[in-house]
Image (cartoon, rainbow, N blue to C red):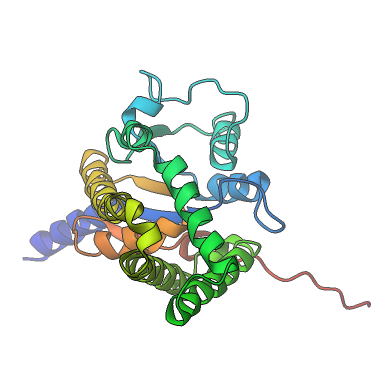
Length: 266
């Protein structure tokens, strides 16, 4: 009996040691006042991931799962490239397949710019209704708060309260723009585009969650770090909580938070 019990304990400890760990880090795509390539590189160095899941689809990486050579890589790519100089890991994509080409085919960038300029023109010329002016002002206020948040350290804009602000902006933006377009004849040409934007956002986040969950099965027992634009983090975390087979943790649960510097003179 004692022998069987000991065997159970040993097996249990071995199983716990092989737990799959998933860490989602919201990032900025360019250096800011308190979050830079150096900051992300230090975080990744301390985490020592076995696998890094990157916010790209398979077509945006090379055949051997690395970054193609480009003139100006974004913050995350620079940090990950530096990590490879001293730490071994695997890099895998998790974004919706074909998302880049879909946006190009439907001219997302051009249409978003044109819609924003059209709404701003009507706002500035006083041609929006009073309620729509209030909606534009509300979106602008939330957006300014998010931009300020982006100037903070990673542990601040990765906090649950920050994710709640991201959710508020997305819900407010999609709802208010839909109502503004529907009630403003001059914006009618943008109605189809805006519906496509909303549908694609939901589809993309669901695909990313499914792809991340699939990677945790492939790399069972490993530590996987997901790098995503911080506007996606709420939606990824919310979706991943419905999956099993891995432990979902924040990066500071593993490496701790930076300690404030002691400026007191002896």
